[in-house]
Structures are given as C-alpha cells and as structure tokens.
Image (cartoon, rainbow, N blue to C red; front, side, top):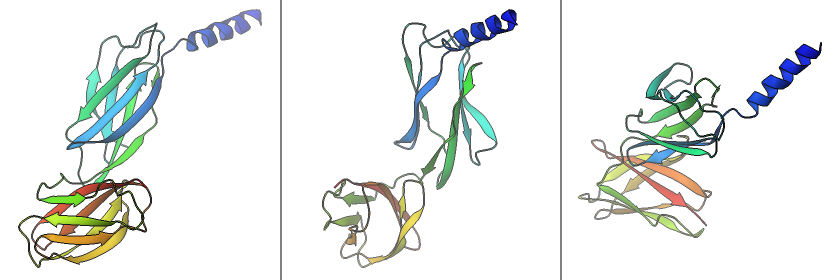
Length: 199
C-alpha cells in the first residue's frame, strides 16, 4: 500500500512540472489566420503540432515542430500564421503538445479575401447614431444585395442597397460592439470588408 501511495505521489509531482498550453487564441490576420499560444515552463516537450480541420473531426497537420520545445525556467510564446484557410466557412484549429496534451478546439469563420475595391468607414463605429458609409469604387446607381455577418459567420442583417456615385450607407445602430463582415454582390462581383463597432 505504501508503494502505491509513493508511486501516485511521484506521478503527481511530475505532472506538476509538465508543460501546458495556455493563452491559446486564433484570429484573422491579413488574408489568413494567426494562431498564438504559450507553452508554460516545465520539463521540455518533444515538439508541437498545429492542426487544422474543416469539420472539427478530421484534422491535418499544418505545422509540425519536431524538436525540443519549451523552457524549464520560463514560459515560451509561439506564433504561427496559417496562410491557406478555407474561405467563407468555419475553420477549426487545435494544438498537440507532444507528448503532454491536446488543446481545446478553436473555431473561426474566415470570409473570402477582402476586396480592395470597397472601403467602409468609420471603423470603428463609435456612436449609436452612426451610419456605416460604404464606398465601392467605379460604381454609380448600382443595385447591391448582401448581408452583415458576425465574426462567427452568422448573418445578422439582409441588405438591399443602391449606390449614388460610388457611395451608400447602412444603419448599424442595432448592432453591438464587436467585429463584423460586410458582403455585397452586384450580380457579377462580390465585395467583402470587415468593420468594428466600439461605442
């Protein structure tokens, strides 16, 4: 009995020094997804793997660091940029810290590559009464339809607009603070932009 208790205490003491994944975040950055996390100090891990999935079940490795990782004396911050996510859908990420643990799965909606022929302002919107002004270059009296999506890809507003010269406005008084995506289509071209509300 004493041997079993001693063995359990020994295993528990080792696990207290094992590295862990903390501060794990995924967010949009440019035309891809940034993955950031921290490996907490402790006994060195044998590498880490960043995994990606389109369905949260079947994952493929997008980055594999096979060497010794982490530090026994301090936390180590890791950043990775995934430049090939799937557009207009949810993307799922997880991290395997070899052989210690697997992270939770993080989900992010990635809109199609932002179109440079559209600009949206002000961003951030800072007052309740503000309208969002949308400028779509080289359009005049053009009918547009589309949606405003939240950061998870959920459509929040249906839009039917017409440009005057190359401008139109959208009321955003009913939206809460956060990041949003605007997608418009004139029947031939899709225009996508993001904007922020911070009141």
